[in-house]
Amino acid sequence: MLKVARYGPVTQIRGGRRLAGRILYQTAAYLVGDLLIDTGCAHTSSELCKLVRDRPLSGVAITHHHEDHVGGLEALQAERAVPAYAHPLALPRLLEPPRRLALYRRVVWGMPPPAQALPLPEELSAGPYRLRVIHTPGHAPDHVAFYEAREGWLFTGDLFISERVRYLRPNESVAAIAASLARLPASDDYTIFCGGGRVVEDGAEAVRRKVEYWRQLREQARALAAQGLSQREIATRLLGREGWLYLFTGGDVAKRHLVRSLLQWP
Image 1 (cartoon, helix red, strand yellow):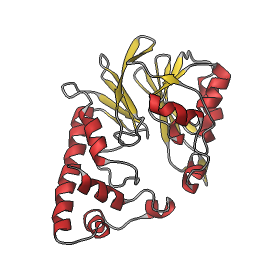
Image 2 (cartoon, rainbow, N blue to C red):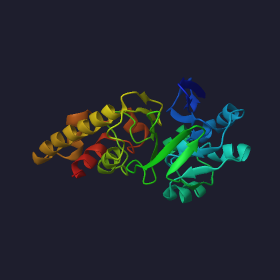
Image 3 (spheres, rainbow, N blue to C red):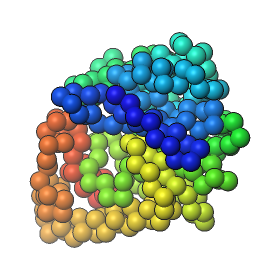
Image 4 (cartoon, rainbow, N blue to C red):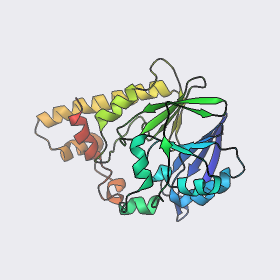
C-alpha cells in the first residue's frame, strides 16, 4: 500500500506491506525533479512502478542497500530502464542480496531482487535541482544522504529517523552515526526528509537535539556502569523494559544494543 504526499516540489511516496488492515512498518521514497530517491520494499514494487509510470524519471538514487529501500529497484529498472546510483560499497550488495534475512524482515519488507547500480558521483542532477552526496555510515557502511542546498532539502534515509532513538540493531554504531550527523551542513537550516516518512522542518536544530539526547544518555549510562550495573540493567533503568519491537524482531532491535553502543562512544 502506497500513499502520496506533496511537500512543495518534493513528492513523498510512503507505505509498506499491509496486513490485517494496517501497514506493518512504513518506508518512504522521494521524487525530486526527475530523480527518485529510494524505491521502497519488494512488497510494494508493482505499486511503485504503476505510480511513477507516467512521470519523468531520469534515474534512481539509493541511500543504502537495505531491503526496505531497494526492494522496488529491479522491477522499476525492468519497466523504465533508468540508471541507479549508490555508494560503491552498496553495489555488490545490490547485485548479490543476502540469501537469508531475519524472519521479521522477510515478512515486513520481503527479499530484494538483484539489481544493478552505478557508483554515485559527488553530485546528482534532479531536473532543476542539484543534490550533493554526503557519505553517512553508521546505520550501514554504504549509507549516504542527499542535500539540495538552494532549497534546503536533506534526504537522510535512515540516518536521522527521530530525535530520541531508543533502539539499535547490533551492527549499528552510535559513534559512527554521530560522526555522520556532524558531516551534515552546520551553518544552514534545512528540512529533513526521513526514510521512514517523517518530515522535520527545523532539521539543523533537530540534529543537534538528537546528538545532545544521546550524549546525556551516555553520561547516565556510564554512571550506572560505574555502579556495576549490566548493560541490560542500564537499558531497563534508563529506557524501560524491552517491548514488542524486541520480541517481534527476535532481539535484533533492542534498547540494550543502544546502551552498549553508547558506552563504546568516546
